[in-house]
Length: 177
Image 1 (cartoon, rainbow, N blue to C red):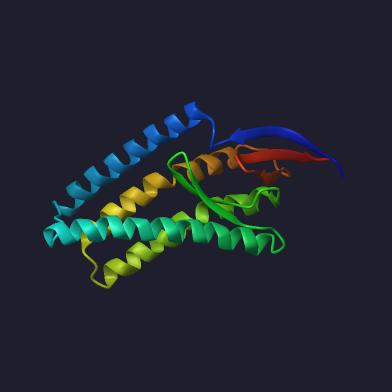
Image 2: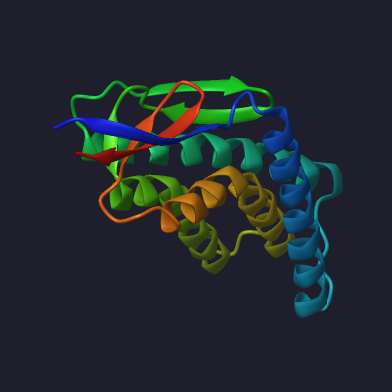
């Protein structure tokens, strides 16, 4: 069955797209931070400098977990595919260049890190981890998911039956037949 290219999305090299996504990411982190302050009655990072270290360290760990979750789902849906990790243009990424996935599979691959890490943050809060540090890591992580959310929006707007190719630069949509 022959595939017909519908659309290519170059997320890593399209400077205008990256700029727009960064603007949305900044808006997300600002809105979430303000909402967190308003609904918590104000929160503080305890332990001063160590609290800041925990914030940045926690965010770095969240990024690693985020990309690992992408990698796990790439492999779960295509065990034979090679998963690649990297950092380009200020973005950490996991990819499976040349592998094809259904629309539903790629949606799950895209949204899974947000769901897994949000669940982890809720769990850690119940364990007593500092609310302010945890919430700020959540806000930063959510803003960092902007590219994944963008993919999800694109996928929702694609016709049923398309397949998605993960590429070195982003994704491509194909129709079957």
